[in-house]
Amino acid sequence: MDGDLKHTASILLVDDDPTNLRFLQEVLKDDYKIYAAPSGERALRFLAAAEPNIILLDIEMPNMNGYEVIRRIKEDTRLKSIPIIFLTAQEGREKEQEAFDLGAVDYILKPITPGIVRSRVGLHVELESYRKDLEYKIDLRTRQLKLTQDAILDMLAGVTSYRDNETGGHIKRTTYYSEVLVNNLIKQNRPGYQIDEAYARSIVKTAKLHDIGKVAVPDTILLKPGKLNDEEFDKIKMHTIYGARMIDDSIEELGDTSDFLLTAREIVISHHEKWNGTGYPNKLKGADIPLSGRIMALSDVYDALISRRPYKNGFSHEDAMGIIYKDSGTHFDPVLVELSSDCFPQFKEIAERFKDKE
Image (cartoon, rainbow, N blue to C red):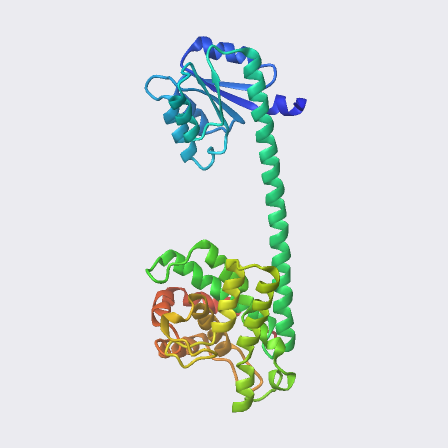
């Protein structure tokens, strides 16, 4: 074993027999930092403030036996990964199995042999070191992939803003509006509108891609300074389908049906659907519209209303909210609007913070 590893690792010894504690300390003190607890209760008090590398735990103790100590440790998310080696004079398979079922990794039979203790402890200290090193590398790789993913999302969103009359500010604002809405729903926890952290993260991350399909719309339509005629509007409505096809291609090529890509697809194809079924492209109605699409619809329309365009002036926050409340139950999910009423003032703050330059 690596010398540095041995002398930096700490061991918690738990045994109600003072003779056993002294013996184990003598066997291990030259290689490890040793802590001793004469009872299960004292061990748990120690663990409330410290995290040893390994725990050697006597099973047969008065008041709180080793099985109960293991249960308590495994219920604590901070402590549950610490390897526990149990010490027992019992050779019955049932006793051993119970400790393993509770999460112990090994056992040492009494009377204790110094060479066996050193060997078993050394093995598990090394294994624990390898586990932590692997976790660190996985965490580092995960963070690197997340940064890469975020950079690619920003790049794709930037492509949309470069080609559209709408701005990068629109993408940023609608992303923040969506974040406000999903965080509010998490707190509300309303049946039918419950949203977990993973889904919330997916919505916020992929909100910026809601108009990615516009890259496939001809410039003559996308960049037209005036209002679109019916034929042109039919063509621009295709951006929802184009965007969904792009994501479908990615899913097929990567073989990836993760929540992230599926949420992106939901938002892209459904953010122009309307609660009363008159939206596009699929004329979905009510709760058939994915919740992510209903959230994006609120964010997108609010920002379209307050934003100045070559063919219109922007509405005030109050006037925009008046339109949203008026269209609640026709364009927008009325329950979502009701649940979100207290957080709509944050939209105004976001719009001011990230307003377009003249």
